[in-house]
Image 1: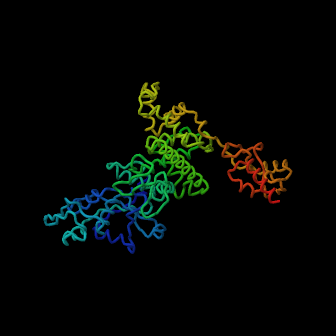
Image 2: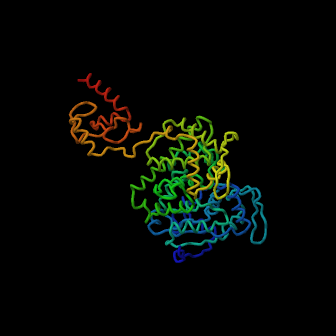
Image 3: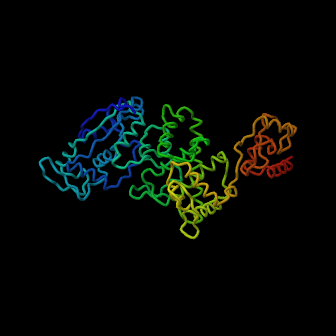
Length: 490
């Protein structure tokens, strides 16, 4: 990142001036609620603390804005977008609009040193002189020019918040216009004002900022946890299976995924809509896999999904997708849950006598497999340890007893359909009636969903309408039923 790209100016503005720029008619309108900011779930005490700081006359730090390019301004109606300080800006706006009261402890200190107790009051109920002092409070802004990129805005946000413990996912989320960032936040959580359809794995019982309970998780989502989980999935699933680190998802790798796939100008998704659709389907399928698992867990144990389980089963899902080229299905989710959970109990269970006691040597010395397994679940940047955790799990169960491996190729090629139709003497395999090649489609004698191969020995050619009617029904049974129907008709 070059210094040239970070041109900026500074500006001191009163709260009154700042608030006027939130009006939709303002030519210098500020977007205080960009989707790239951390979700606005701060506690009431934090909001009240910000107002108390202002009323007492203390400095609350500088705020950073990004000047939007002309095309974005016209589309969104904003000239500036918040990079850092969104909580402070929103607290000021909401207090002026009487959406919350001051804390019970709040005191206003006027320029002459007079102290006035103003605890438990809305803005409209403050004494006039206190309102005036609040409106005249000076805010310090750093304003970056319109050449700033999403990556630079994200890095600026991260570096600004080094002392306030901003995690890596919060930094990635601030990649405002990045297509990956947009997809991940919209599939991971409800976004204020967007009404987005996020994945049901992350469904909430309550959206109360003080009590954000989810239906399927044993612990509350904080610090963009669910965004991070989806990001890890995306990073692993979109890697080439020949990659040396196909089962890792370090912070740097996650960021690289955002840049390579999601950059709005140079990214893969912006250039290849088919690839974007394929990548998104991988994520949706993976989250569906996890949701089916936790539903089976709830049916069998009444328990919910833990972050430890998510790490283990996200790795397992990626492993199965890589090994079977995304072509497998779980035969019975209840059986799958019980078998895999029993295998997990060998490493993280609560019954000591069931835990594995054999040892393993790594760079930390000789430890029990159980100790290593637990520690490896916290490591996301080491291929050897990630893969070893999967290998240990698979030692405790026969995975191919629990899944059906499907043919990676689902659709019969045209040449094969024509060849089989000739052998059928140009008649429909279902009805026995004459069939023209233009109406012919290939179907699986043994259903694809049951592991039937997409090869000539398993190919039957029938009329496209019959194939549609057959759906997932057993082909032989469907032919018998259909011919009986036709015999009654004719």
